[in-house]
Image 1 (cartoon, one colour):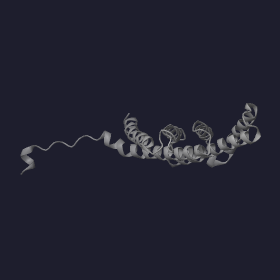
Image 2: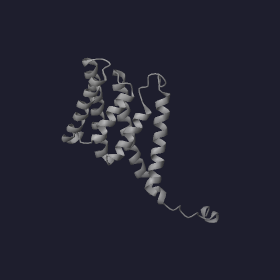
Image 3: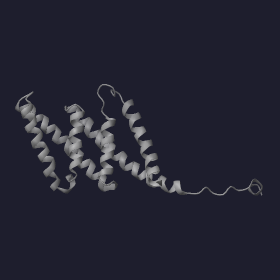
Image 4: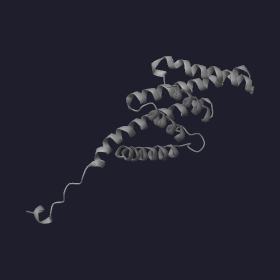
Length: 174
């Protein structure tokens, strides 16, 4: 329970800061460069990938590859025939295949990260600006997740400490 409390405190503080900063940046309402929801997706992936430096590496590499796959899917579908759902379907099928087989290469072996990265790109608007916003937000979210884990490592031992016995007033001034 102490670990969950420590994580809750650490994640809560950092998630609040991410939200505050993300919604305070210029253009946050119309053209956000830091997408808070995308950061949260990366945060979840970090823990799903096992946390630590390994989870950070898996999350960043796989989600960024997913953003690239998403961009390639849009480019292929747009070049082939704008507005044709069948062409888009084929492009998505090829991209999904690619996101799976790239997992043979250890740095990209976290398949969920690739799919979430592509989904975040699509959700961000599937434009050139979406590449930057999704990629930046995924990296920021993963780094904050790593920081939240490290913060919990510091907080957890403090939760189990018993307070030092109070020194009677008469002895403090002796």
